[in-house]
Image 1: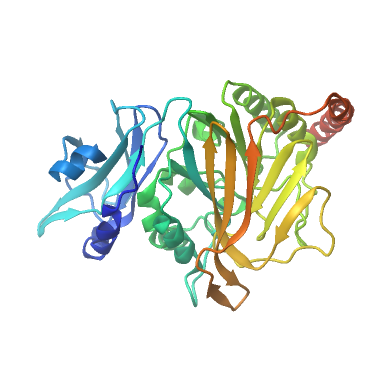
Image 2: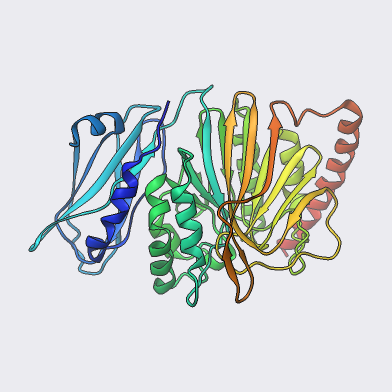
Length: 421
C-alpha cells in the first residue's frame, strides 16, 4: 500500500529559503516501471546532483541511498535540465531532492515524490486539470488550484493536464505558471498535452518530458501504459491530414491493448455545451468512431472553461477547463447526451481506477467570475462511477453505432480530403 508523503508539507515550508536558485521546479515526468525523469531550471549553471531513495527507506534513515551527479551545463543562459533516474523498483514510492553547490553553501530543493508503474490489478489514482492559463491580478487562481491538488490526500500516480497550460509560451507566463504550481509538481509526475495557447512552441518541449510518443520530438502525441490503465494523449491543433491520420492509427493501436481502463486526452472538446465554443471541431467524425470501436471509458477535453459530463455511444466525455482560467458561460440548451453541466467554478478531477471500475470526483476549488473569486473548500461538483464492462453495448445499439460509423468514415474521408487541398 502506497502512502501519502506527509513530509512534503514541511518541505514546502522550506521552499522559500531555496527558491532563488530554482527558476522552475523541480518536478518529474515520463514515469515508467523502472524510471522517471526529474526536471528543473536553475538561475545559474552550478554543480548539481540528485539525491533519491525509496520512501520507506528514507523515512527510517532520513538519508538517501541514490545519488546522481549532473554534468554541468556549458551555457550561461538558464535552461531546463532533465535527468533520468533509472534502475528503479516497480510499484514503489520514491522521494528525491536536488542539491546545488554554491559559493554560499548547498542549496537544497524541497522533497519531491513519484511512484513507479504498478502491476495489473493494483489501484491507479490520478488528478486532471486543464486551462490554467494565467492570473496576474487579484487572487492567484492558478496557485489556488495547484495548492488544492498538492493538499489532496489522494496518493497520486500522476497529474494530467488537457492543454492551455499557459496563456502564451513566453518566458514570463511559464515563470508565473511554475511558481503557481510548484507544490502540485512535487506531488506526482506531470503529463500534459498541447493546447492552442502553447502554439506548439519549443518552450513546451523544452519544459516537459512525456511518455513515449510520436510527432514533433516524438512527444506531440503519446501513450502512457500504466498497470490496468492506458492514457492516450493527442494533439488536436494539427491541421495536416497526415498528422490526423497518424494520430488515428496511434490511438487505435494503443487503445487496443489489454488494459481494462482506457482514457484519451486532448484539448478541443468532441462534444460541449459551451456558449462560445460548443462542439463543432469535427472530432466526432475523426475520433469518436475509434473510441467506440476500442471501448474507451473516458475522453478528457479542455478549451471550454466549464465542467460537463456527456455520454455518447457508451463513451463518457468530460470537459474540464477549470484549472485557473476565468470560467465561461454554458449555452442555453445542452448538447445531446449531456448529463451534468456546471459553469462558474475553478476545479480539478481526481480519478481512481480499480478492479471493479472507475470512480471520478470533480472537486471545486473556487466559485469564480471575471472579478470574483471565493474558495469553496473542495465541494464536489460531480461524482460518478463506471463499472467494469460499462461500455459493453447491446446488439441493437451496436447496429446503430455501426451505421453511424459508416457515415462517420465517409465524413472523415471528405474532411481529410478537404484539409489536403
